[in-house]
Image 1 (cartoon, rainbow, N blue to C red):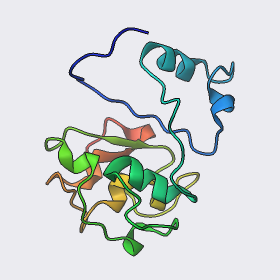
Image 2: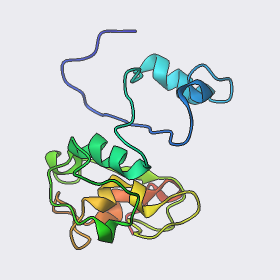
Image 3: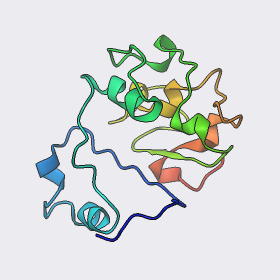
Image 4: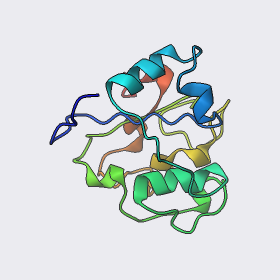
Length: 148
C-alpha cells in the first residue's frame, strides 16, 4: 500500500453494519469493497464502542457516544456538539444513506433506521451545524445527485 498523503482531498467512509469483518474483507461476495480497501485503506483496529448501533455512529462522527446508549430516534437525542460535519466547511460533506425514503428523512424506512444516521442526529431544527439545510447534504443513495 502506498504512503498516505500529507493532505486528503476526499475521505470516503463506508460502514458495513450487521456484517462481520470476515463477511466483507477477503470475501468473493464483496469484490468492489475489497478493491477499494486494497487501493485506499482499511480500518483493521476499529471496534464498536457500544451496542446497539447509534452510540457507535455518534462516536465515529463526534468523538464520543455523548452518553447515548440506545437506538431511539433523532428527536430523543437533541445534540449540540461538534462533529465531523460541523468541522468541515459549509457544504463540504455528504451522507449517502441506503434505503432512506427522502433527503434527510427522520423516519425509519426499509433497512435504514433514522437513529443510525449521525448527520440527522446532529441537526437542530433541520439545519445542520454547517449552516446549510440537511435535505441536500443527507441523501438516499438512489438520489445522490438530487438537491431537491
